[in-house]
Length: 207
Length: 207
DNA sequence: TTCATCCGACAAGAAGTCTTGTTGGAAACA
DNA sequence: TGTTTCCAACAAGACTTCTTGTCGGATGAA
Image (cartoon, each protein chain N blue to C red):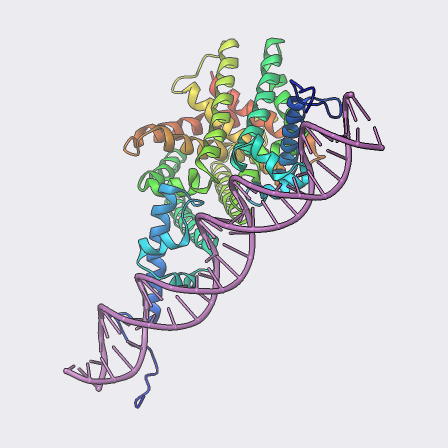
């Protein structure tokens, strides 16, 4: 208590702020790993801390809650992805390159894709399974209709992929409509769904 | 205890089995209402029972758990929708009619859409918001690329809708890839994403 | 009216998680 | 080596939800 330090002591060559940043990185890395493999809902804070070698106390000094931690992880992922895509665009990449760059960003670390698009966000595996079953049925229905209509796929077009994407897009348009439009505005949803269907339908059987 | 009844007594003109069926219907109706407005994660069993005028005991006699209840609700919704779509198809409806019938099935009761496609299944509103923010950014990015490429929309095509649907479809293809393919099989994802992009891109700028 | 039955309401225990407080030991200085 | 600082590990309380058991009012039958 003689020579009072104005700043905290250095440990492992890092000052207090750097150590805090490292704890944060460790927690986010553990969150990526555990949320991807077990899902967000099935990963308690304590397990997160054990995996990251951080005390529960330290967790609450870094994040307000488990949800905040997940949001920070998502923010980091999206920020990185967006920066990468913007860079490619600035380099003058063409459309096919951009799509491939997007795929590469996810393929590089499947945990990223799992957390951002997969069951990571789901309430439970069973519910996620039910959700996917819906989409599979819908895609199969579309394929059946196309078959009945005698659709001839344009060269390089995989009808199953097109149907899956079509369904995913339509479901997303519905989700958008739910939060952006009033329930009374049914016309905009009908137009959007019909319009997107025409786009895909046109692209599938392109001359 | 003299004349033992072989079957339970009738109440409100219904025997035991019918009353049980009615409780089930009331619980499912309450689940539809509450899951749609508050979300699944934010609706405890007790609240479900209060809204349905059913005791917690009765709940556990009907469903094994809250998740089972949600799965039953989803199953009912999908079954009804699938039956309706199959009927339309059998009637010889054309593709546009089918799309519109699908929209109509959801528009009729927005709670159905909310439960099946909206925030109903989400872990929390904040996470759902983050997820949607991702998609909005991606759709805006696509629009920017198309603008830069001087894409001229075909008549009747809304570029914003097409971009939103494209992103939704691509994200769904990723989700599919995550559960159906091994992480090492990166080629199939690349092909699927590129293929679906070509389909939409072709349909957008159709001559 | 009287009685048997049903079932929604209530109570209580169990289990899990969140959140904060404490501490023992490790790591860096002197 | 001795001292100080830091922090992961541990502990404990509060809270929420799940799940099962009991009870009393309501309902219909006799």
